[in-house]
Image (tube, rainbow, N blue to C red; front, side):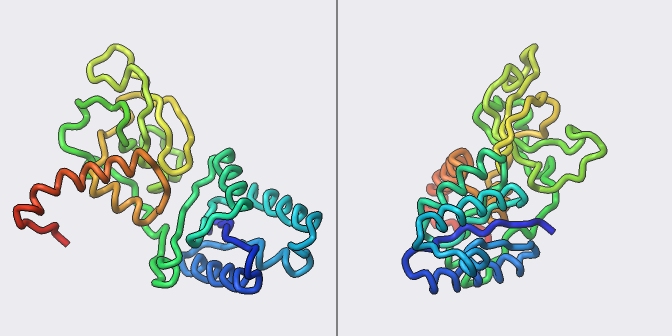
Length: 237
């Protein structure tokens, strides 16, 4: 099971926020992970109103993050302490999920779909398209046979490289993992093609990250559907 660091506000209504942290832990546990929320631990013996003890708690929380697999930012408010946790998670290439309050209240579980994306999740014929600035589906064999892969490893944002150009002599594609930000040199042959918007939307629904590249793809897909909807056509459920 994955060890998850729960990031949520503490200051303000401290008692209420501690209870919320407990609720967030219960929600995370229902998703099949092991949650850790500093608010439910350190406040038992540290006083957040005392600057030295507050700093000690923040430092202990940062040390704890090094041992976790994911960071879940829960609720609608991001405090200064939470922003520091987010920045540390980025430096650690740790997956960061943003879970809104209504998702917790409605018990909408995340991280439930771990199957790898494949050729069927790509736009038809996109293997001959330009890859630069596109979200690509990686072939599992690109990792080698010894890797235990999940959907976390499927999607990559192509930054640059001669391999982004179809037919170019150079084949290097420099891409960033959509989930954790790892930046790796791949070859063009390592990818199936460009991900379909609907497959990307399903992936993000299960893994609520914040990605400008993904948002741009989904927004463009909605705009492309707008004329059809104006003509009275409806999206399939």
